[in-house]
Amino acid sequence: MQEHAATTETTEAPKKEGGFPPFDTTTFPTQFFWLVVTFAFLFTVMWRLAGPKINAAITNRRGTINGAIAEASKARAEAEAAQAGYETALAGARSRGNALAEETRQKLNAEIARAKAEADSKAADAMAAAEARIAQTRETAKGHVKTAARDAAIAIVERLTGDKVSAEDATAALGN
Amino acid sequence: MALNPMEQFTIKPLIAEPLFAIAGHPIYFTNQALLMIIVVVASSLFLTLAVKPGRLVPTRGQSMAEISYEFVANMIHTATGEDGLKFFPFVFTLFMFVLCSNFFGMIPGSFTVTSQIAVTLALACLVMLIVIITGFAKHGLRFFMLFVPKAPIYILPLLVVIELISFCSRPISLSVRLFANMLAGHTLLAVFAGFVVSLGAAGGLLAPLSVAPLLLIVGILLLEFLVAFLQAYVFAILTCIYLNEALHLHDHH
Image (cartoon, rainbow over all chains, first blue to last red; front, side, top):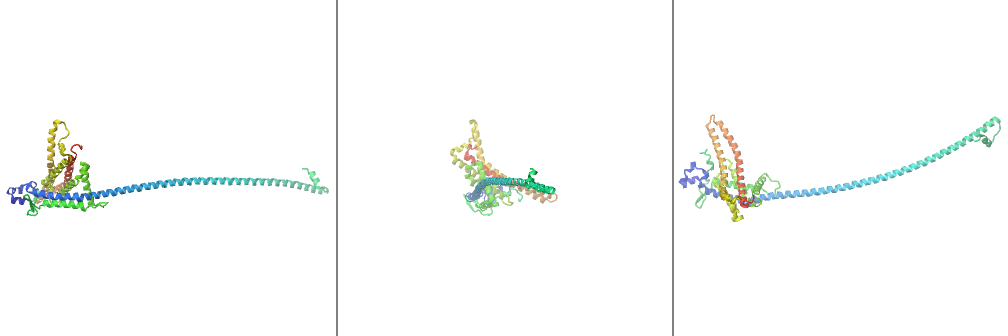
């Protein structure tokens, strides 16, 4: 520009050495022209291409992320519902199990009590029978003692006297 | 001449002959024009090719594009509210243009588009033009209430004058802030680079001293990267604030 200034306007010539370049007004038309062209170009690109494209990228990502978050929270709610259902089922099963166990225990207890009572009564019967047998045996043994005493008395009398004593007499003589 | 720190701001035609003329003004293809084209083509390609809408997990490039998009969208939303979002393409373009111009200007040997007052002033005037059109389109003549703050009647004339001056100085402050920041940073870098060269060329005991300005350059360079971003941000946020006033006058706050 300054070469141009020097050739066209002689008054601009001294500016070449000591002048302040930004205040060289001969360059202004060129500067304005290129500024308008480049700024308009950049504005068009930003307005029509870059802006909508970047906006779409940001909006898309936000949409995707929000969708994923919504999906995740839905899945979480489902999982929580499933967990609650599982826990309800578990609690039900546990209480049913407890009831069953209790019932079984009571049944078994009753059976045990019954069996024990039966065994007790059987044992009592057996004991009574055994006692009866013992008493009978004792009576029999008593009888045998009497007979043995009578026989011994008869044998003693016979040896001493030579008389035969009848069994009735011997018994009578022995008394009771 | 090579050490002149202002040399880097000279606009030079890359093709000696003018391309054509508009109303008698010759239009050249200059180093600044080349950088503007590189800036808009690079940012256009980056913001369109790096992004695929179907991508759930963004790549590094797409992530950067989305971050810049949301950064500007949030900026507009906080500064002007929901109805400011229709200005998104404009503010986004403005932000990306200034940001990329600033950053491409950081490449050694390139040209800083935003270090030219003509460019920043044109952008600031465009902003003010859009603010004024929006204001009149939305509020009609009630837009002039922008210059009438809620205050006792006896100080109103003074306040209206102050508001008017403040409004009219906006394009100047908006453009000079960006222009001066970029100009000052790059000039400072060039000045210190000149020190490195002249100390080194002096030789002898002075040569090792050239390390000091070199370290300073590294520090300033880091600062300039921050300024490059910050000035783009400031330009965009002020645009949003001015748009907010045009949309809601004073009754928003």
